[in-house]
Image 1: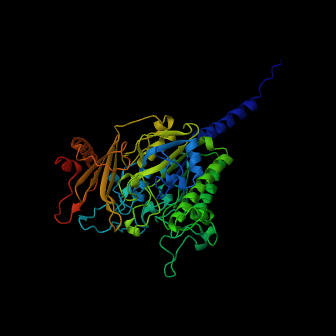
Image 2: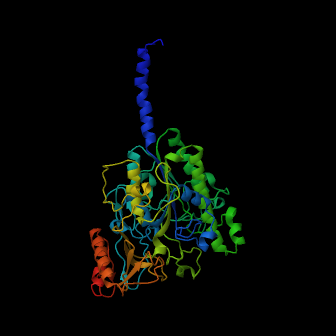
Image 3: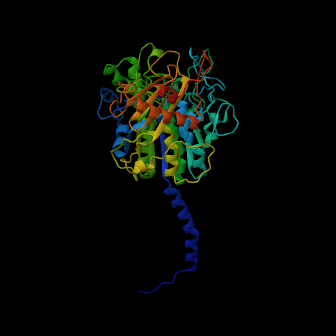
Length: 518
């Protein structure tokens, strides 16, 4: 074989071009990350069972794309958020628990407006009514380093589409671009849409003026029959075409307004549920759920079409339990969390346990099931772990724990972990089971609930009693004392705000003080 000398010019070309290939490859080594967040979706509002059995409610809904995600990824049967929306979203952004952020309730679009209802027994706490801020010294906000900004600084193209609700109008946190998103689609300070209907311009005018909750930035769809869920999905997928073309990793936060009220009918899916015999409200709600699932299918199809699914992580989650607490609606319910107790606004399982699915073909074993309990603030350290981002400077202390080890092995367990829910607020005017002024603490299978107004502790073993029907506090006082001590220690460490009795002006006792009297 004759030896052919390599031209010095060819060698020079290799030297010049090689770094470009290397750079492109290093970018592609970072996985794309999609957080698919649903609003007010209950644990049972899907055909995917998150319990040990399929229920009648699972049979009600059609969510084939959630089923696909469960087949191709991991199902979490003990996934938690906060009882209401803004605290969950701020915890996801910062990795900090609501007890630490003092964003314990939903924020109003109106700056400096307290959304707490007046309570006859307790004074309202001075919580962060304006939500989250990426800028220091903004009144009544939690200042922190947001997840999108960290990803953005580390080479990710960041896209927000849908509901933001991080902070009130006029504060830095109200604009997703201020928290590190390169692109913002339809995100603002509002917590729900005025309308899902394109023909109504996603608005519901009051006395001829735009509604406060009119969805911004979707003028291209005004006057059309495009449902809001489809509009924000279509725009999100358009936005990530740029990083896909440029071979740059992307972070897509697709946060649906669905399935929050108003119950506008998605006519594409409504008839099926009416023919099933559901009443109008339940049928409209089920259609909202199916429309949300179609969006998930559109995302999966986009990944397939562009052949990037193997290098894309999808995290599916809801921000709080289903709205099945009925007093505010005269007893009518259109979501059902059974066998879980209560719903949105409550620290019982119905208000905080969520449907969670994760697909990441390179790492997650198909059709795997993780029973280890995780909570919404865990998304922050997990996503940074997955992105390979270390030694980043943060303003806030992170309470979340990375569940990347669980994604690699569904059998990873940590029964010693302590998690906390803190809701020192009155959610709605009507009464309901533990939907006001309550906090909860879980360690292992044990969960302790504290009702402030009645200075009452409830103890449940979730493994034996997922519906929290059998309060064991009286029969297991030592377990109550053990958990109450840990509970109180955690509240103090996080500098959690604590309510005061109106009658006496005295602070409500901490859980360990109440437990000591048992």
